[in-house]
Image (cartoon, rainbow, N blue to C red; front, side, top):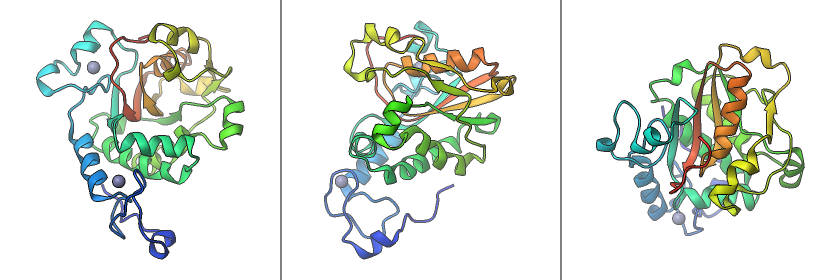
Length: 250
Ligand SMILES: [Zn+2]
Ligand SMILES: [Zn+2]
């Protein structure tokens, strides 16, 4: 269900500007976006995607819940929900949240993702919500983990607890987007480890949360670790998916 309008004291006191492009925005709108970005976001949300891997795929390309890509490169997780493709205005909202240190955008992104999760046929099967962790050194530099903030907003939609200790990032890795697709699996291999008290995941269905899924290598490595810790099923919720020509590690 949709939340009440996103109204803050700041919105009431300051001229409204679009959170994505900075243009004037209608005051007291449900989303802090100008008309152009609001329309573009609605288009992204309405675009069809594969329920298994999250890639763009029309309904005619889906068979038995998978697209052609999934059938060619079997993936490790059970299903995906996303807000939309990694295009404007989602791209700007994500980058401003992460790199311009605007963590106040994360609840908005989480709420949009929660609306998608609410209509996922498997949404009720989730037992725990696990954000993709940042290495501690990067978390200290940035001051927050955007996946964690999105997950916190998401749990208001699904009512399941966020559990951070099931998954640890045990070494820092260069940004996947800066690497050639062939190097991405090597970059994240061994970067994650089961958390403390991992026995508690045995037989559980996990919802893994991240902001962007690009080649899928980070998600695939996290899924491998969560399954090794006993997870029965792993579903993925990402704000945006970026289509890519070559698979990472599935
Ligand atoms: Zn805008
Ligand atoms: Zn697919």
